[in-house]
Length: 284
Ligand SMILES: [Zn+2]
Image (tube, protein in one colour):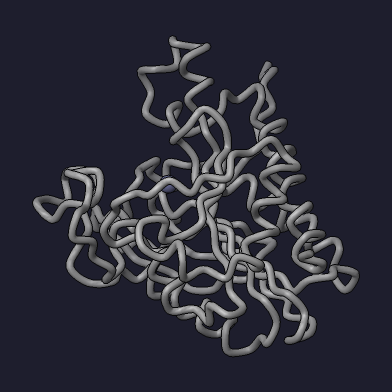
């Protein structure tokens, strides 16, 4: 008897159309998406997740929220675009990197002079974590292409949340380019993120970091910044290791909540994203 009913997640989320596919070792992995641009003048909310394949919880949150937005359909006050899993190879194989061993969040052409040793990105070997790769990987090309289409086809503000998990005791909202772009951000546009954090017990973090090749920073740099805002939602998982030390041995436990509270965590974060919908169409 299976007493634990966990949410099943597959690399192919069949209720969503296929955006593109990537191939590794003659096997295809599909990237699914949802896109509903109701009116170009309305605000657009973009949710992306699971660029680090091991962070399954990020996909679960994105999918749950996406289902709610699909249900809302025409009643939604915002345009909505979602890629619940940017790294289907990583999700299928429970790895951080893609099939080439590249960390897709260290892979953009952005380079920092003072990057953090090793963690900030390395080009020694794809057998080690944080490998940057030499050129933009296909998953990131797909992401960039979609963002360019969104920027082009809309006229209103574009709010982009990229969901991750792992770092921190509780969920943090990180605006992009904390290192050098702080003063160049449109403060007004970042208010909905701040409010979402405040309303949902999350931490709005503006601490500088030195990562080379951050893809969200790269996308933000390319975006029409007078109407675009982006942030990382990092679901902090440390407390579930600290309070349940027997989970320490399995890598995926470092990035995901225990099975028994998975649904609760998904529900809480999906609800928080809904407050962003409300904030983003009346940002003041
Ligand atoms: Zn991540």
